[in-house]
Each structure stands twice: as structure tokens, then as C-alpha cells.
Amino acid sequence: MARDEWTEVPALSSGKRCGVQWTPWMGDFFTSWSPRNSNNNAEGPWDHWVDLALKILSDPMTAIVRPDAHRAVQDLTPCDFYDEARRELTEAELNERFGS
Image (tube, rainbow, N blue to C red; front, side, top):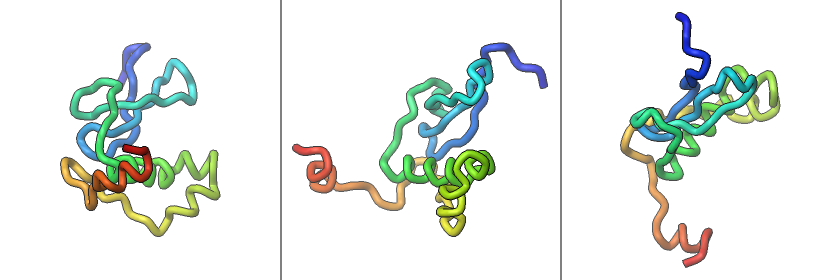
């Protein structure tokens, strides 16, 4: 399938708005991506970002660039969220980490 010179290629996502895409014209370069909105505004609860990180670390490309990180997550399974999260952070937990 031929693609436009400036077409970004979805790579991985978690949740409906949290993902990364490949920008072929920039070589080995990826940008944030919202699968729902098809824009660069990736967003979601912390658990979606953790899920995305697991998918990135489990990807065969990670085995090439960071074999140690790839091995570290081999026993972990992403959740493939859509709207839900296994656990959301409480206001108190967020304030403890980032201040009130």
C-alpha cells in the first residue's frame, strides 16, 4: 500500500486516546498520537500510559535497541484498555506526587 510522503503510521496504542505513531520522513522518530482523534494529543489516565509503556517495551524493536528492557517485561501483559483503567490514582496520591 502506497502512502503519502507525510503520512504518519500508527505504531502502538493503549486506551482510545493514548498512542505513538511513526513519522517515516524522520527515520527512527515517533510522536504522540490519539487513535480516537487522529491527532498528536495523546492523553489518558496513568494506567493507560503504563499500558502503552509495556507495549513499547514488549515490541520487537525494543529487543533491538534495548534488549535488557525488552527482557524485563516479558512476563507482563498489557491490559488493552479502552475507557476503563484497572485503577485510577486518587487526588491524594496525585497531590503527594505533584503537590497540591
